[in-house]
Length: 280
Image (cartoon, rainbow, N blue to C red; front, side, top):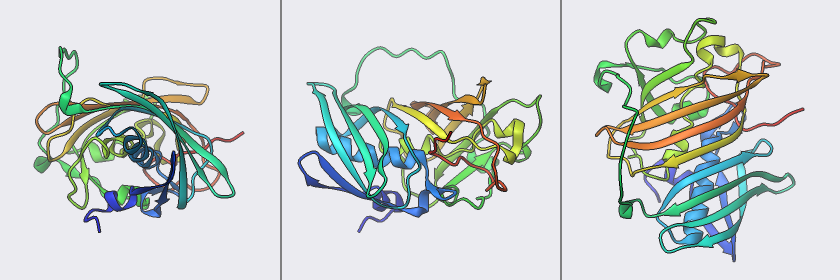
């Protein structure tokens, strides 16, 4: 049996040509539905195995309706198999509910990636994890799976008002000590509270409509240094942009999420996203 929860809860098996099966665990729930990054991680497992590539280079998910814990099936479509990169898509469905999400991706071998490097951005300026303050897990299951640390004094960032900056920088790692890899980055990219909560507080929630994660390198062991921010909220739609660096200062992932800002009809669940959902 796999030693770590993430590996157990993202295990998939081939059941027929192009058809894969897995089990959505409630351990990664945000509210009553599985976290969108968790669904992406399972889809990435199915797709990498289908194209026989070790790493996802990019994954894009469209969340069609809320998922539920329980069995999930993936129908894989091979779009193109190349010498260095391959392309494939998978539709996740659950019995009696039809398609819940669709993911497309680019796959290859990060260990074989070579070429020019030029960075205009730099990692966030944050004290080392030992000098930062832990963010206590809230009453959301997915939050309990991670250890998160922020700069001293930043813990009170929630709901600071209209003049607040919708940005959050934090160190993140799995609570059970599992090292990050290319497969877990899809989940970790969706592990922080929505930065817009700095402005609106826990009265708002942001169900995910679309999520893209680009994986640029396999992370070194240790913490991830993360920065997420929202610059534009227009007519109820917002973007979450994220960048993720390993402890060696290497950029390992970028993410962009399209989400909907919604006022809850019931008391908020606390810090964290409640993806994926579409309504109206």
